[in-house]
Image (tube, rainbow, N blue to C red; front, side, top):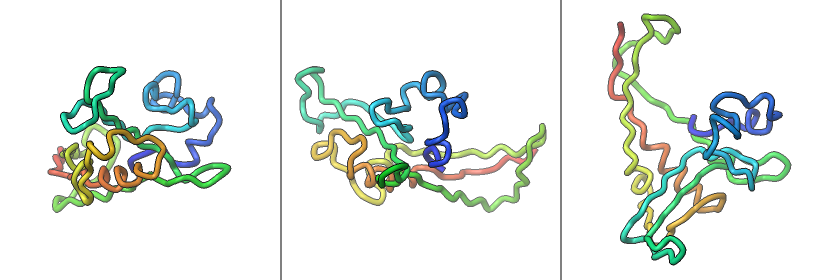
Length: 149
């Protein structure tokens, strides 16, 4: 799953520890203004982005979150990814656990299934366009191979 499930997102702060602690492990991946996790964040510069006079550069940023809402409905950008292997693997938690090798192609965020124009959409946070980004980022993961020790 890409994202933080709704049950964990609305749990009390003492139950969100480690990488889900908004003040520590999740620092930079939590919207304090929107009280929610950012599932995927990509930022950069692009000659297609409009010039930001405050930064003096052509900046884009996509921060995608939203799990469907707690007290009122929101978009649900949680995405379940199904990876398939032609190699048998027994998932276990010991020294002999298999190693899964993934390819992550960030370009898929911009191209598959919908081509995203940075010129038209230089920023997206908790807006309707975030659903387009979420529908694309689900396609960036590919299971390449498995090592069975």
